[in-house]
Amino acid sequence: MNFFPTALADEAAAGAAQAPQPQFDFTFLIIMVGFIVVFYFLMMRPQNQKRKEMEQILSQLKPGDEIYTTGGIVGKIVKISENRDYYTVQVSASGTLMIRRVNVAGVLPKGTFDVVKTADLK
Image (tube, rainbow, N blue to C red; front, top):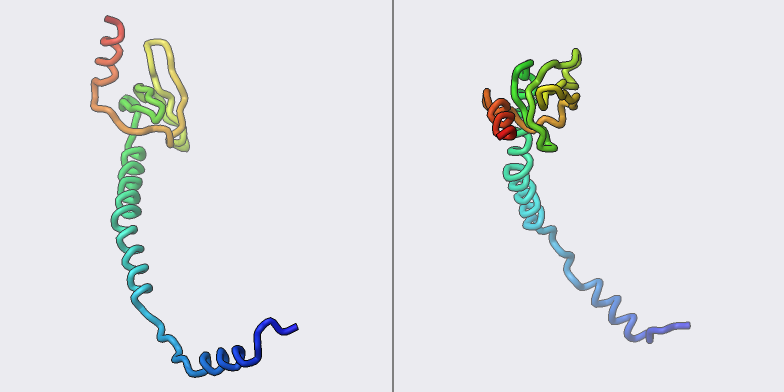
């Protein structure tokens, strides 16, 4: 069963044969490369620099340094495991916690832990 009349099919075939072939436009490619470059310099590069900076800070930690964790816990490092993946952190006069290295959010200035301890007692 033919849904198209023969005359229309012949005209469509003749028109398609005479239509010029479209040229490849590099504009889209240039715009996409531009977006990728902008995305790299605005998002990925600063994040990689921040990650490297944090790795350097974590590699220099030693017992006695005061840290805070991603969970908001403030404490003083008492002991570091042999593989440097776990820290034993003093959080109070009689309490210690063992935390993973990846949960350390930053290093506090010396004396911060003692100030926080005495402020909570008053």
